[in-house]
Length: 438
Image (cartoon, rainbow, N blue to C red; front, side, top):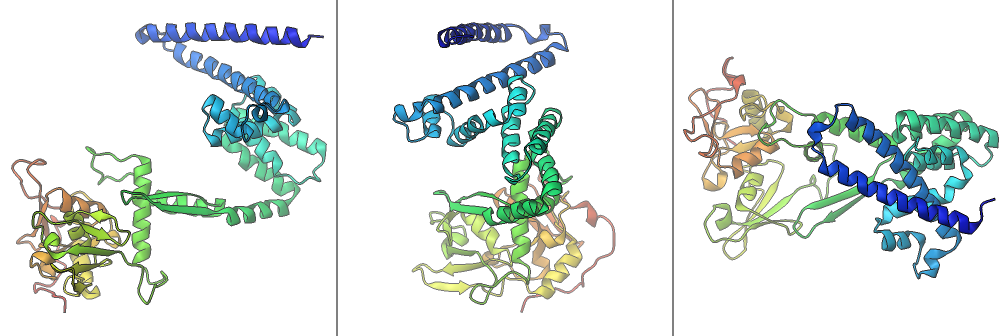
């Protein structure tokens, strides 16, 4: 039998050899021209390094378990094992919690431990299996749990850790359907969404949804976040940015719905407080403000003032209220229907966003004397509404009674007017006379 001293010497020697080998490996990889590699070599080496990394993670998990058994965190003055790992190894607190949980559970799951130590599954897979096994009722026979454990190890090995929870749920429903129902109820109870306004006015969102609500969110947001042919190829947006755009679109749709709950008799409303001088873009003026007290530029205030679903509060020079939601710039439903019939969607060239997603944009801003008439309105989706107000695009109604767009000089030096291709053919869908808001 190996003594403690002999075991310590073997571990010390193995770590020294491992550290030296890792040093040589890194040096060789960074000093070698990658063009000299054979095509199959990088993939083969990546697989070997991944297997080594998994075994090292298993070794670290074993050491964490040994440290806890000897109360090292407490002896070193740490308030918890997680805090000790954070202070000693620089782990994030969430990573440390996962590492400690795995170290405590791994000894009672031999199949998981063996696969982890062999490098067959990674640390995420081992943690996923241990977490899944906790969901089974205490009355589950030991032999049944052993079979399930072996199956989950195979699932993690062949399909990855993300498939473990689904496979475990299948077993759970067969053995104890009431336990799966209780798990779903617990998930619903634990659903959370935390909203925090950042100092710069942005909103930070963090939360967790149960599986049913999560599926709904993915279905709705996924349809809105899909790449579109109207996306600007020169300014591509990644999936996280598109999902953020999709969430805002859902909020806009909800805000315009008759089913949304009212607050003090009106639907949820964003209030913009802006000085009249600022709104008229006179130099040297202060910004506008949202109800969150976040400052916004004059361009953003003017864009929001175009939106029929937002009610600006306009102040005079002495901060006296001059107008709250003045009807002269909020297009009535009959007028919006006429604009929708004419534009049939976002009028910006190349955009395919439907009319239901669009705002009515005043081509000549109402603060500059523009009327709320069909000849001064066009449909713009939120993205192109922002672009028109911030990037210097000009919009006018042509002789064909369709919106035309003049790009800024930095986009096209000749500033040749552009028009959406959907207007290049087809009958005029609006009456020849103006429709003016009453």
